[in-house]
Image 1: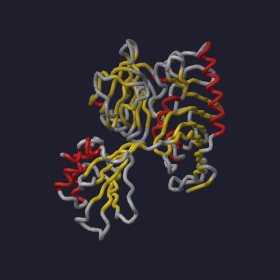
Image 2 (image 1 turned 120 degrees about the horizontal axis):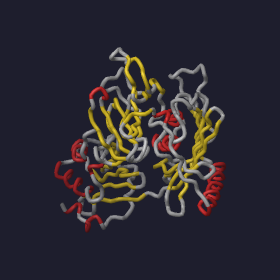
Image 3 (image 1 turned 45 degrees about the vertical axis):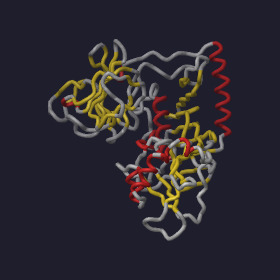
Image 4 (image 1 turned 45 degrees about the horizontal axis):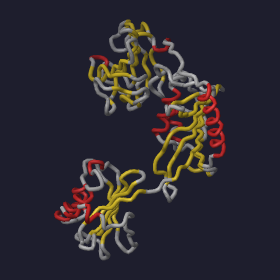
Length: 414
């Protein structure tokens, strides 16, 4: 249709038109399965105009990207609200830094507009105390889930999250956020620095880009934290069954347990222990939903009893170390939600807790000097960061139903 043609769209200003307060507005949240056509017809727009509006907006936005919960603001001509009230335009956020919408041109036809929002970098400092797991502590402090996953992934080379994390441990985190002109957080960026305090022992890591443009995390000595395989592929779990002989909980007789079991709530993310190729993905008898990854000619890892697989994981496809490949469940021969984890060396299962892997590379010469300078700048920026998220440790007598006191920029809220 002509409404979506570049010629008509070009007559609009780059910024979306202002919507005077006298113009009635209606905000509609996208529901699962909704199309833009469904929504337009639902607000009373005639079918012909709805088709025109859809064609116009499709010129600047892939309408397949509509997601549940996304909000669309519609503006109507002045007058009494009700069905049949003329629609003047609409707008919505296409992504964190971009808005798209519709407006009528001087001929009354719908044309599309788009507007790129300017975002300001806001380095953010956060501190949290652990009560159950790093992940839950971070979420309680208001730290985005993806940032917590990234931090856990970076520490997973050196920390056994089932045995080394204790109530009362704490962590500091320094990461980037981007805010819009109203100060609202639009998106998060990279972790710059993280530090764990585990029973008095402190581990720190810094994000660093070397002269070749390679990005990695290094400890304060300039040693890469990356190793061949993660020490544990899951956070917030407890070791419920070790490697070796045990009485099988379902079969009732003694059997050799060829991996380790980590008890965790259904839906807890499971990470690939290392880079590799997915050899097997699917149902495997008593293992239930199962994934096996070949890392090199010597090592493979296996993950069983998943509730579901992560999108994008397919047999023959490559996965990255730390990539979420599935979620904890209780499928197959299982008495409750947990991850059964195996490491296979030349095809035979070995004790995951006993495998030793070489450390990552160490920076030297100019690279080490550059790292030390970058580390000093990061330490100073962390100390000076104004945007502080802090969550207090939960008192021993508190119950799960009690809110956790959080402190943001020095102000306590509940």
